[in-house]
Image (cartoon, rainbow, N blue to C red; front, side, top):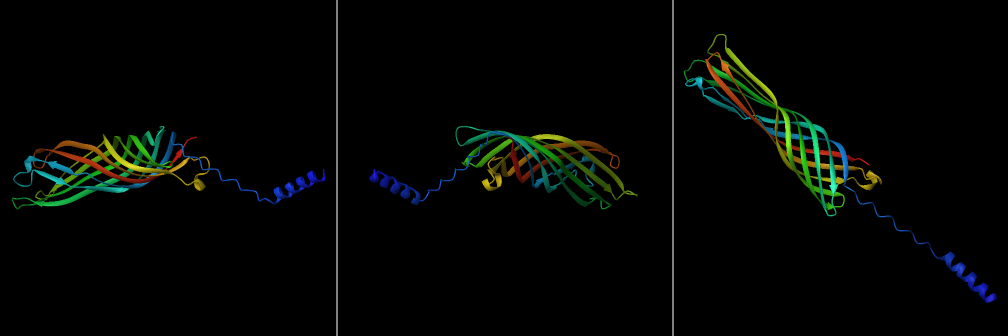
Length: 256
C-alpha cells in the first residue's frame, strides 16, 4: 500500500514538473475567391484622338486634307463590381463591370499659308474622352492561394467628342467656321492584372479585402460628321478615332 502511494505521488510530481507544450497556432484560412465584390480605383490614362479634316474645295489654296495627331491623357477614377467563381483547381473565372471618369482632352493648333500667297488658314482641332465603362470577362490563375494573376477582355463604351475651328485671314474680317460633335461610342478592351488578399493582420479573419493593379487597352471606335464651309463654298467632312491605355490600382470588398 505504501509502495502504491509512493508511486502515485512520484508520478504526480513528474507530471507537475513537465513543461506544458504550447499548442501550434491555427493555420490562416485560405482565401475563398468565390462571390460578389465591389470596389473603387484610381489611375492614369494616355491615348490618342487624331482628327482628320477633309475639304476638297481648299485646293489649290490649301491642303484638301489635314490631320491633327491629338494625344489624350489625364488622371482617372471610378468604381467596379463583379463576381468570381473559384473552381476546384488553381483557376478563377469571373465577370466585372466598371465606370470611370476620365476628362481626357487633346488639341492641336496650326497656321497654313495659302499657296496663292494671300492670307493663311488657322486651325484648331480637338478631341476628348469624358468617361468610359467596360463589361469584361476575367480568367485568372492562382499564383498563390491569395494572389490571382488574370487576363481580361470584353465590351467598352464611353463618351467621346471632336471639334474644330478654322479661320481664313484673307477675308476682312476673317472668315471663321466651326464643327463640334459628341456621342457615346461602343468598342472593345483587353488587358491583364494581378489581385491579392491583404495580409491577415490587415484583413482579419473575415478575409474580405483585396488589392489590384490592372492595365487595359481600349478602342472606342471613331466619330464622323460633315458640314458646309460658306467661305470657300464647299462641303467638308471630318473623322476622329479614339484609343486609350489605362493603368490603375484599386481595392475590392468581397461581400459575405
